[in-house]
Length: 153
Image (cartoon, rainbow, N blue to C red; front, side, top):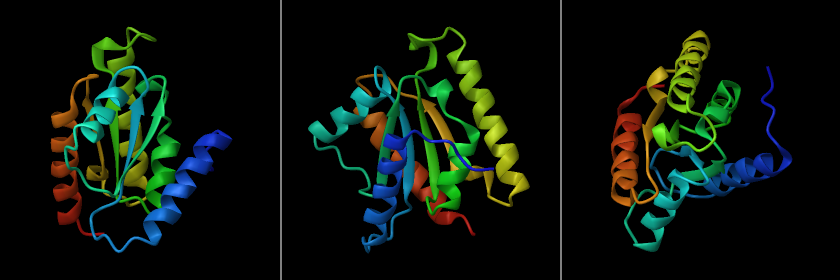
């Protein structure tokens, strides 16, 4: 099954892929799906406040974390990302009251598909991040990088 990304998301994903190929950084390559109103401002704060996290972290923002498709996650992993992190809205989502449940279902479905394709389901993580969660984001990236570094292919 081919992932159906918008043209803009395709350009962003492929530019990240090719940029990281030229990078000698040995840190695991992580794709983060963030949300434009809740988690992305927190991630931006990490950069503005110069809080260190791996340069091998690439962020794509979307309106709502429950809009991430399991096939997008699989596509990213199949194209060379070591892990995928969903920076979820949690209960603060302005689009859907059922966002946390729907996002959790996406993770469960993705892990099922990953297992079917012999991809370690530990390569996906999710956490709710708020608009001022700069330190928690950096901590999540550090911890996830350590987990990914310890996984065998």
